[in-house]
Image 1 (cartoon, rainbow, N blue to C red):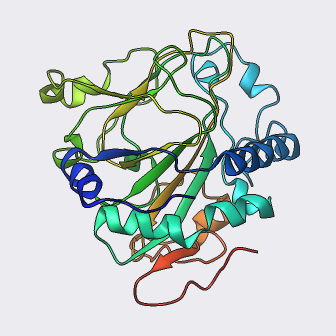
Image 2 (image 1 turned 180 degrees about the vertical axis):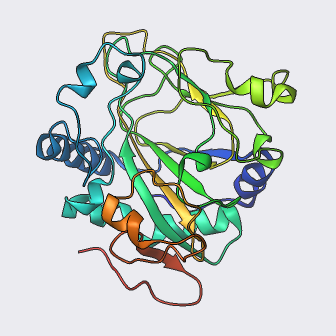
Length: 276
């Protein structure tokens, strides 16, 4: 894994809210990540979020969202291979370096796979969906196939992380729904992020982003992981938390359960949960 970041990349990230990083994975590591993905998809079946009931055939539904991407969340919790890959302190350090923070925890990993002819992903923000609110949340997005203009590469609206609030729009059929909340963003020129397999990008949880439809008969596989700063607190949103975990939390509680949100990297202390 190539985890060195240049000062220019860090500056670009903080100014624009995203950055790309070429050749993050070696060819052998790409195959390792692909094999782990295949293994987890077989293991998980149609269960989208671990610990949540999923409707049978959800990915084969005819509603718009079902046709945006195939999503499986928190693979690290039921697949030791993903635990080793995702709970990697080197990735955590990259996130901390980009955000200028001391420690980082997993929020959730997820597959974002665009099947052949999949719908576009409308402009949206990430962090408002989640159970904590932070201007320093960050996600890594790893291309496991070439992400192209034709099959659904990411697009970003640079600098939107600086003026975003925690208002958001859902991933629906109208690409411009987010601009009803943030009309000042409608004139920002979007930036495409096509990537070769094995490259990755990072983006802030309040950076507006979306993706084209997959206009090809092939697959666009990607693995992502969202991270939250160590010290983040509960905001009352359930999101991917189980009913039992959600019921134990009160507003303002630290999100520091090592079974749910393990510490991946810290400049001041050793993580309590390590890869196996």
